[in-house]
Amino acid sequence: MAEIKSGAAGVITNITQIATRNHNDLQNRDATAAHPPEAVGVLSPSSMFPQDIGKNWKDLGVFPPLGAFDGFAYAGNGIIVCGNGNGHVFRSTDYGLTWTYIGQLTVCRLIGIAYAGNGILVFGSDCGHVFRSTNYGLTWADLGAISGSGIYSGIAYAGNGILVFVSIDHVFRSTDYGLTWTDLGVIATVGLYAGIAYAGNGIFVFADDGGHVWRSLDIGLTWTDLGAISATWCESGPAYAGNGILVFGDDSGHVFRSTDYGLTWTDLGAISAPAGIYSGFAYTGNGILVFADTVGHVWRSTDYGLTWADLGAISGPVFGLSGFVYAGNGVLVFGTQDSHIFRSDITYKLDESQVNFPRRQFDVTASRVLNTTYTNSDSVRTLHVTATVRCVISAAPGQAFVQGKADTSTPPTTEASGIVGIQAGLLGENNSHEVNFYVLPGNKYRIDSTAVTGTVTLGKWFEMLI
Image (cartoon, rainbow, N blue to C red; front, side, top):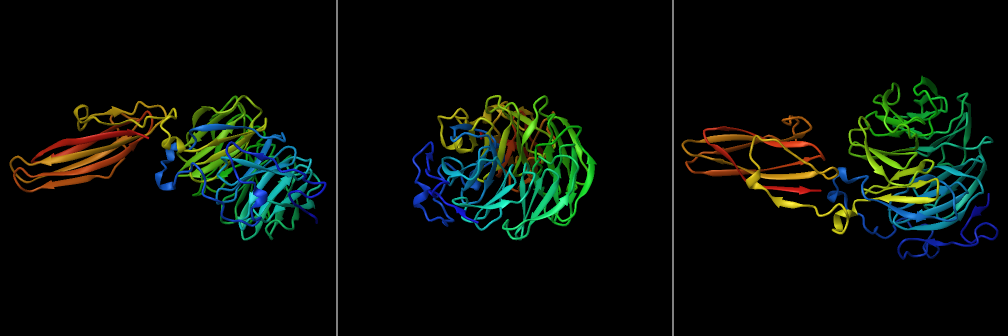
């Protein structure tokens, strides 16, 4: 099998820099470089708050040669690789901020892509060929026509060299990091166009064109039809969010959720209807899942897919948003059917010219008292509350208990901070403690207190929108 290299005669004759900022030409890099420079505009995990993820979307523009983006994979160290509907491959080494055109692997549509570690990436195509890179997407080898019916779904990696993809009605499996493949035969009797997820413990899950969910418990060797979960077709691949939780969507905008590794499912209703869900779901950690609908809106859940909020229209009304990927460090990237790439990060926290600023910080001691309910009226930003609570003794030793609370009820009942105990033993002694907690957009909050032989008062009370 001939390997496709940048500049190879008759295959790739030109590498075009596509970027929003100056970026070194990847041809001048060592093809096996595993550690690109530190990404520009990416915050460290310690400075992130989960509620920031999915905000601050930017359209990076149209990326020629044109084609609908259908697959993105994150390969670590800031490297993201994607392909489009005309066989073109693009690569970023700075968490999707800038992109380099690698070349055209095929005239077919590049769809599923998976990262298998050690610089190995595997692409599927609708002409049935599998393409493989061993240097983080810089060069590619055509492994030939693996599937005679074309590959229209995603590829999932289970570790230990095992990859699985679905091709119309067959399942294919590799145990050598995608180098060779075994056809496991006909699995379903309808089309398989959705992505596939690995949920650990040897469990793979996918949904078919008839709304059925299929599951394997032996790393893809055998499969069980769990029945019709959805009434329509499913092009959205499932995402695994840990602790047995899987989520996927269908063509009618319904979201389905499982908490037992795909064995049983709950229809959460028409979340994005009438818009359908084709993009697949990205899990970012901390219970946060994100998907995009067919009219350009991005949706987010912060409770492992149980409830969803519309973050608004990110792109124009194109036919679906495909190729969703989370690259860590608060960065999400997806591509559209009209050749755009969109990127979300949390660098607005570093730029006070952004619409999310100012991060209003103020001392409101005079207007805040204990045992009273207040509201975070901001629609998008979380409120960080810091309060100093004092126990002042006027006659005898005293004790106080205080706790910050925040939720949607009046008064709030959910614990937002630990219970703080304050004790003072001498007349006139003034002991204090600081209470910190976060309040989600639109939620109510308060600090409840109980005092014994003494008086509980507030000192400083700071609130910062983040």
